[in-house]
Amino acid sequence: MVSFFVTHISSILAVSHVLISVGISIRVIMRRTATGVALAWLFLVSVFPFGGAVMYLMLGERRISATRVRRISTRQTDYEKLVERGIARGLADVDWSRHRPAARAMNILGKTTVGVPTVHGSSGKLFSKTDQILDGITADIENAQNSILMEFYIWNEGGKADEVLDAVIRAAQRGVSCRILIDALGGARWWRSRQPQKLREAGVEVCQALPVGILRNLIDRTDLRVHRKIVVIDSKIAWTGSMNLVDPKFFKQEKNLGEWVDAMVRLEGAVVAPLALTMIGDWTTETGESLDDIVPNLRLDRITASGPADIQVVPSGPGETKDGLLQMLIATINSAEKELVLTTPYFVPDESILCALRAAAARGVRVDLIVPEKVDSILTRFAGRSYYDDLMEVGANIYLYKKGLLHTKSISSDRDISMIGTVNLDMRSLWINYEVALFIYDENFGKSLFDLQQSYIRDSDLLEPEQWAGRSALRKFLENTFRLVSLIL
Image (cartoon, rainbow, N blue to C red):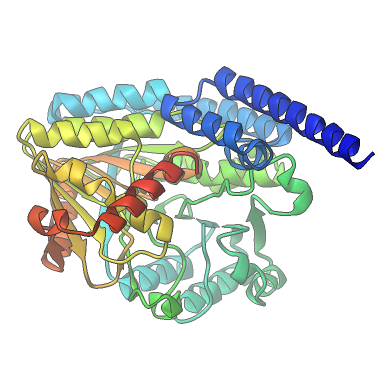
């Protein structure tokens, strides 16, 4: 009897193994996932059918709920109408004779893949000192008269971040319309604090982006996060870049990585409109509030061209875009004729980005990649290092930043085409997170970004190929193992 029972159970498990493997394999194949990623999932599910299937259903697809899909579709339609109004007012009338042909080609690429044209006439000032960034945001909030929009992945209590919060409370109390959107997971500690309630008591509308929970996990992929950092004040001033609303002196000091090093851009002119619409789109997706109820109060129609820079705002994320941001990053890399400088805290690139970087270095472009010496992710630490050989063998330079966790996400191409924003050069930012990036066509801004990147290089050590080649076989094995895992995460 026992033998029959064991045989019966074994048969059921064997059949289940086959059915699960076949079912997941069909799903992977029909979704036309990247070949390397698809093969990794097929191998995992065939070897570990039950655990592999669970992992695939949790992490293998950019799964979002039907409600989110519907709201994103609605907001994109509304967004396109608002963009058309801006075009009608001439905000997209860029004089492309002022720029290299590569910039005009990138504009067409962004319009085709994401639906966002370059806007003419903006000014952007780059800030890299934390105190100056937080003091600047606070001062702009203190002068707000009509509306404040804020969106961050993380808000952390302590230091000058609290001064920003107090300024928002004072603004709401004097009648300014204030909306704040903070990611549920990134800001989990903040959401458990007293600060959200203090804001609500002052009249600020505060909302969680992508709430997490057991039931929600059944319809949304849990680790899809809103990673954007946007502040828009009175539809006149905007801030964006790599910095969360934190004071580094009070943020993750227990990690022993030093202070996080960031950069933000303070913007005026035409670019304020697409940044405001990006944040409002996220707000309506989470709340279900109508864009028509929000936009009139923002007075976006009053935004005019002001400044020398032509800027393309490119948002990305599941349900919004496919590979538009990835294509723009590749185009930026390909645009370089002399020099290319990149900064990113997490370097686990898509294969196409790796190929573009190798091609740039191989055709004689000076390629400088600046990454922090220490990062807060074991996966990224090992997986990222596995790509260093690929770059150094074609002549690219890799710099290890030593004065903290370099968190700035930027690309400088020949000092006249720039990217700065929230997107890391890793698989999560490229495929999973909701991100936003500025592609700035302007020599003045390009020079200021290049100068900032050179200051990072001065605080870094150049990784010598001979020294790197001498690391242990165990480290090489761990790096390549984590590189494989990163494909499916």
